[in-house]
Image 1 (cartoon, rainbow, N blue to C red):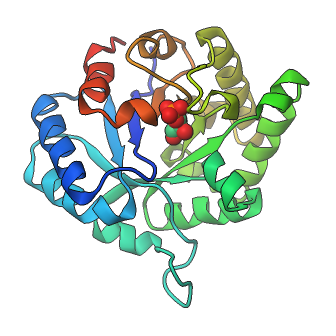
Image 2 (image 1 turned 60 degrees about the horizontal axis):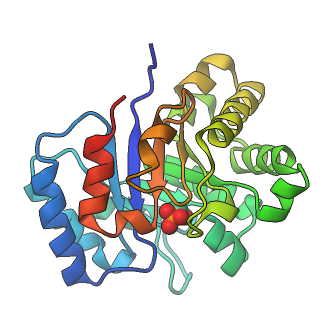
Length: 256
Ligand SMILES: O=C[C@H](O)COP(=O)(O)O
């Protein structure tokens, strides 16, 4: 029996004003009022966290709030940054760290990302650690090296007892926003490799508890096949999570 509950998260990236976020959430919360088959997370931009949080607090649904980033310090002179404790004020449960868009556009390194993972855990937030190879690395057969390095550095000094609080998101860069998702076979191969690497870094028992999401051009059409893969424990959805009907359809039509 699979001990890992699936987790489906929507990463809105730099999209939705406060009023758009509220309108989305009103529909989502109604649709998912009694839903509990998988964990559902929405990750709005910082500017909409308060409004989304308020709506979640007023609802009986089990939808959880996630942020898209944090800074690894509790407070201080870090202009423009947001601390883990500020996210806790909004009742965030999850935070995305190491997304490839931040690695590429903002120069985030594995060492910095590792600090974010540990800062999230120390504030009792669940980090969603994003890893994945680019197109050239896949073409050259270098994806294992890339993923192994990102995992080893990203999870460095994470206490084994906190490992199950981490979520790994495998997001091949060549699949993000391109309309070309990894096939279920490709996703399963990488997810299995990730679990083997976590076994090597920690232990078999701990690796069995870690949830590994797939992200990259997930749609209502391909979600189910990806979720049926034994090592795919959920989805991190970008574009298709922006439309409430398509996000709901992925969640409600998924059978585990
Ligand atoms: O965080 C989400 C991923 O970057 C996937 O984005 P996408 O579903 O638009 O390809």
